[in-house]
Image (cartoon, rainbow, N blue to C red; front, side, top):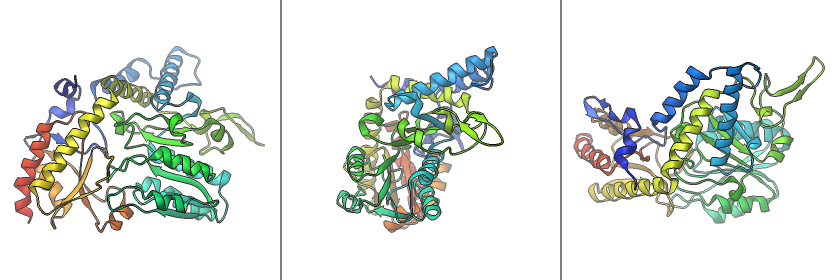
Amino acid sequence: MYDIAAIRQEFPILSQEVYGKPLVYLDNAATTQKPRCVLEAIERAYTSANANVHRGVHYLSQIATEHHEAARRRVADFVGAPSAEGLIFTRGTTEAINLVAYCVGERYIQPGDEILVSTMEHHANIVPWQLMCARRGAELRVVPLTPEGELDMEAYRALLSERTRLVALAHVSNVLGTVNPVAECVRLAHEAGALVLLDGAQAVAHTSVDVAALGADFYAFSAHKVYGPTGIGALYGRPELLDELPPYMGGGEMIERVSWERTTYNVLPFKFEAGTPDYVGSTAFAAALDFVTALGLDEIAAHEEELLHYATERLRAEFDDSYILGTAREKGGILSFGIGQIHPFDLGTLLDRLGIAIRTGHHCAEPLLRSMGHEAVARASFALYNTREEVDRFFEALHRVVPMLR
């Protein structure tokens, strides 16, 4: 049984008030709140095992190293990685994508090569490729969408060619909520001889991910999107590929030997982890994954889908001039919307005064919004702790503020 009352008790922040109103937090696509087990893992790490990892022979360093590497194995297992050597800790999805863009660019990309992305990408899966294309003389190609906000698969197939070196796609769109057919996209890209990076930031908290089954060459994701701490994420890469790539950053930990004449590099995954890692964040990351696993990703997804359906139907029924961005057949718990000519910023500001936290703006996806005729939209995004009653409060607040803004 999905005990929502018990689940909410695990998130202390949800009990607070905002401007004298109970908090309704519907900005989960931006970041999720943290359960007690994650907060306790952070405190426990700092109070009982705080020492730099890998290089120390003393007790605390040994314990911290054991915890950090156990966390790596847990994160790798969560996404179905065949082994932990391909699991690189990063600062988040953005750094993970930049790592791939730089290293793949240095190793594989030549003038005239093409990188393929989709219209729905987050800026973090656009700008690194633009930088790499400018540096290497490659070209960025963009896959269009259908009117429903789905990937245009016919166009995707047509854009794949012998010049395509890498495809970078969102697993789930942070604006449209669209769940892309990534296994099919990977298969087609591989048939064309291209590598594939999947941006899993919006996927890992809502659906089971198996990178081996997907066949992805690289898979990037962040802890803070899946109830873990900020400032840490992960990149899975096929070890045989990572072995061929040059390092992303230089410094301690990523080296084997250093001399004035030359430096040789450490084995995977440490070759890509220069400097002191976030060994506290990694253990808290693992605690977050244990938390969602115990609840069950299928149960979480079903709960969020029910909330999305309920909110979508209410929006359509109760506001005749409302519009929704993204009506894909398979969709995550994201509702991007607008009402008439009301500016999303005004809507979000007044909702905030009633305790309702939503996101407004371009959501780091300006090309997508402009392709759909918008500069900004409002976004309500759902998580495992949200309730039907909170959706009701959201609509009560909408009915109160919308007449003021018309």
